[in-house]
Amino acid sequence: MIAQPLLTRSASVLAQFSEMRAQLQPLPMYAVGMVRAQWIFRSCHMGWGVRAYGHVQVNNQGWMELGQKLTFKGGMLPTTLTCHPDARLTVGSRSHFNYGVSLEVWDSVRIGERCMFASFVRISDRDDQRTAPIIIEDDVWIAHGAIIMPGVRIGARSVVAAGSIVTQDVPPDSLAMGNPARNMSLDLVSRAPGAPDSHTPPPRVPHSSISNRIES
Image 1: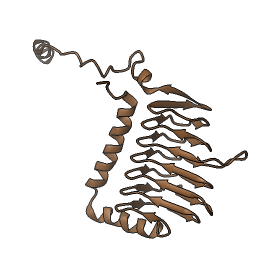
Image 2 (image 1 turned 90 degrees about the vertical axis):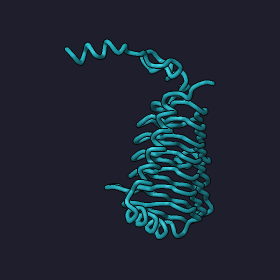
Image 3 (image 1 turned 45 degrees about the horizontal axis):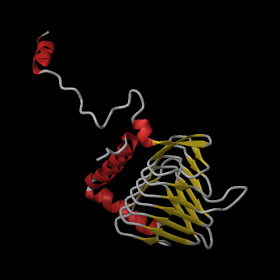
């Protein structure tokens, strides 16, 4: 069985950590987040357990459908979701949006489950040249300040590096990096010189060697 690539595992661990941290929140804070979400997303079709903290803005003139156990966080700059008339936004369950994320939909944006959006990520399906749907599949991690352009499809378990501008499709299990972003297989990244080899167990240190170091 082929081991999951290093960066993909990192994205999965971050998603699990975010969910665990949410579950460990004091009950009042958890409840406040859910109550605020009920008000902020009152114009949306929303699943159970959605939470909103800080400055989160919603302008829904189209169709906005949110899955279960989503987390939205706002900070000094708000996290904004804008859905224009006749547009459609769908977000899968257990995804996480950090502060300053901007999500604007003119036609269609579909986001899968367990996705992570770092601070100041920008997603819009319209620019000066065209309007085209965006699809972000399951378990995608988009890092700080990245921009997703119209017509892009990001495959499952992929990672978009910080500050990247994605103008073309990203295959599953890939790393997109740069401006414009170029794609690289995450499996190749995990095999790069100096990267940990997930197929090889770490070397065992003899017990006598450890004892000698402690005594010295």
